[in-house]
Image 1 (cartoon, rainbow, N blue to C red):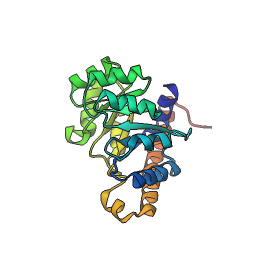
Image 2: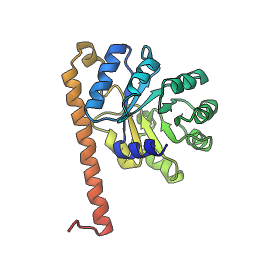
Image 3: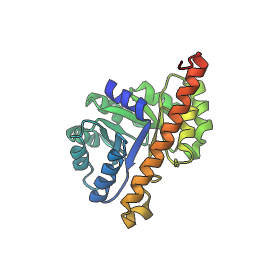
Image 4: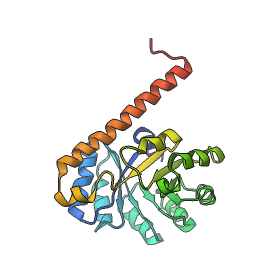
Amino acid sequence: MKAMIDLINEQRIFTILNIDDYDLAKKCGEIAINGGLKLIEVSLLAPDCFKLIDEFSGNDSIKIGVTGVRKKEDVINAKKANASFMVTLHQDRELIEEGKKQDIFVIGGASTPTEIFNANKWGADLVNVFPIQPLGGPRYIKLLLDYFPSIDLRVQGGLNIHNYVDMLDAGAVAVGLSSSMFDKKTLKRKDFKMFEKKMEVFLGRYHMWKSFHSQERKEHSGVDGD
């Protein structure tokens, strides 16, 4: 679990493969990994999603997981496919407990303060606030963390290149990005070069954010680097 937490703190971005074509999903996953993204999650909506997870699980430099988990069988299949983590988009105590039983890192879904509190209480390693943008975006995150400062939040839903770092600024531990990375029009054209450029832009923006906040922390702590 520590390796998963360390990678989340290093990367902050989960790449979600919500693509309804096996070969396309695999190709996009490879583009993301080659571009430097290491937290990859495959949607249950993708054909043969567990086969794809198992294929990617052989890459020790990444963590591969499944998203959209709805029933215990999904959790068991994720474990068989060597998934490192699972994500739910709704609240379900049984799924959280099954994930812990299977020794999978659990990112439990929630929307309201009560759901967030319960997901954490039931053992979720990270609470997935979905859909974040319609719920209020950064302002909602800040309000939640005022009341639950010890609960780690991952957010997804309505995020793009322009607003995802705002969620990190507000205190989210990580973000989940899907259609903003792999949009349907570019998928239809199979314009993989465009996806490679998008990976560079998304990661470049994150590294700028990380560098800025690293410098800010040094200034606040009185460290000037000399």
